Length: 407
Image (cartoon, rainbow, N blue to C red; front, side, top):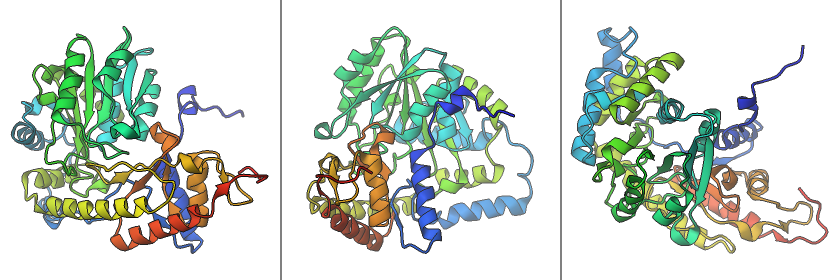
């Protein structure tokens, strides 16, 4: 029997973040002391009041039937109220769809909107799954890149130049994974002005890191004049509430798009876990103090890692304004060698650093920039200091290649 997977599956790659985390686990299983800075996962425990809400829901015995596909009504109402109060976007419960993580939320939207050949403009660097999900839907990702000098942010002018008659949507995150960049209100207004000049263009705004924002200004593009009907806002509980394993994400969108996402989800997974939804309700309606404490810790870690990165010759990094990542440019090391192995690209460098420094990172090519690597600082200060010490030591051993064996 000949085995053939579908062309759509053959055309996409394994998630780079999950692949590097898997390699790190392999090294750890061999007894090697690996510091894993590859996954975008908070290292904090889910706050106690959220866990207690889940326990209470189990003990009450009322949440064992299938929930509504779009999520429980009270949770959707609480999310809508949050948007109205905090983000100034007038969503109602009918605009909210709760899913199994923000990744499914994005997939629901893309599959509900994109036809074969439709173009989706992707601001780069981008979260690894945007490109793959668009291609799975048989759309065409159009990559528009920001630069380190501009804090990796794509300009409104670049957006305008990338729009064609086939453009259906534009997708970006703010705060950004992997760069930590945050679009200001003025920058988002300039993007909105471009979008509003194109009657059929939609915006998919990924705001999963909204709580981890060090600027003091989290603007939702859907709140800007004329943008409510043109914006799908993606969010979830994983990052801001340390609830990655609970798998609760959601969108706020015009009703016709929300209805399409519900239809898609109904055929794929049906509703999100009932108990996880009760925990999510406690998170969004409850005390925000634990989140604020986590953000304070991330801020301190940002300062620490930024200082240590500046001490590594050849590494160039921006100063991230949100999320918990650095995305340093490592092009200085391309073509360098330790005498037996030559670094050809960011993938090579990450594998080399995992092997020699025992630090797990993610190559930037997966995020749209092969000259960079992603470092997550969702780790203890002790691990961060040791990881950066190891990186500095190993990188110092790379010199200009001569007759080295190419890795």
